Length: 119
Image (cartoon, rainbow, N blue to C red):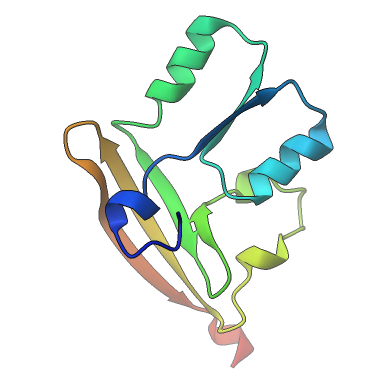
């Protein structure tokens, strides 16, 4: 889905609903690029809030030569980096995505970054 040429599909929210799971399983789901992971059982109001949070707010996506999906750096261990989110080309693109039910997902800002320290 994230490789689709259509922004309406590749930027659509992808939410996993799973049984309650341990931390390692949860982090595996995070590495897959889901926008959110809802582990059951959970409070119904919380589930509704988390699903609704996929819309009418900005999300940061990162694109490298091997990864396209939500910016998950806040969920990584300090000073660690998932190898799929590191660009071999020393370039990454940061996209600010805004989704609405009426218009679907839109890119509201696109920034390209070069790592000049590696040249």
